[in-house]
Amino acid sequence: MTAIDFAAFVKELAAVSGETIRPFFRSALGVENKSRSGGFDPVTAADRAAEAAMRALIKRTFPEHGVIGEEFGADRAEAEYVWVLDPIDGTKSFICGMPAWGTLIALTRRGEPIYGMMHQPFTHEYFSGDGSGAQYRGPAGDRVLQVRACADLKDAILVTTSPLLMNTADRKCFERVEETVRLSRYGGDCYAYCVLAAGHVDLIIETELKPHDVLALIPIIEGAGGIMTTWENGRPHQGGRIIAAGDKRVHAQAMALLNG
Image (cartoon, rainbow, N blue to C red; front, side):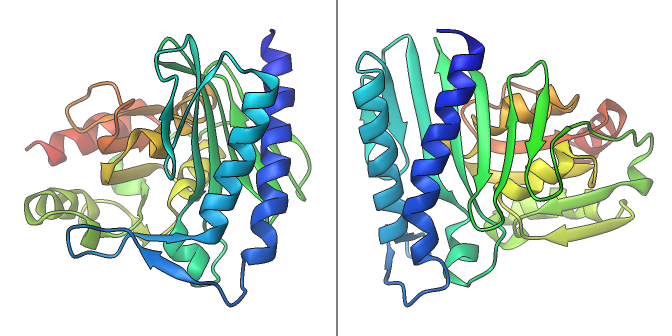
């Protein structure tokens, strides 16, 4: 199976999940809190229905492939090819009727993400990448994604979903960076990474992420010319504390403050 075939199949997955999710958005939606630690970690019928639809299509088309999903766990996780699914990344925005959410679809081979897509079915936008290139398709037309240059942290635009999601120590580290940048904005989840790949913002700093939050985004960020690591400058594949930047110079300056 070629990379082109993979890209075509990912679009099928996005179409199936999008058709499932759209009727739930901005509707009278029941929300369940799946947190076991006293916080708020919402899940909806839309999350579960979309993941079930994608799993069914993968199983019919590639029964030898594995699947790992946020809602239904792992199946054949040891397979050479494994699909990693997050049906609605940004569920809190979803339940508030805000469009800063999306479906994350990653294809990994022996643990390495080789193709990723973020699909926003409400705005009909597709951001995809394979590590060597990244593309946008949507109402604004088709185009190549490319990060922008930013030589100095003081000129950068910083995004995070919310500093309140960070523990006290990590929040203090984040604040050192936030005090330095030109502008900081909160919210966005997966959508923020895509606007970084599109060259609209320069830096994203997050904590407490899971593999399904990041694996689809790595090929998009890297394909657009950006960099994505842990705060320790390690591989981001397992999630945790993540930093993504469009310019390596801003990445290095932010890392110095985070670990200072």
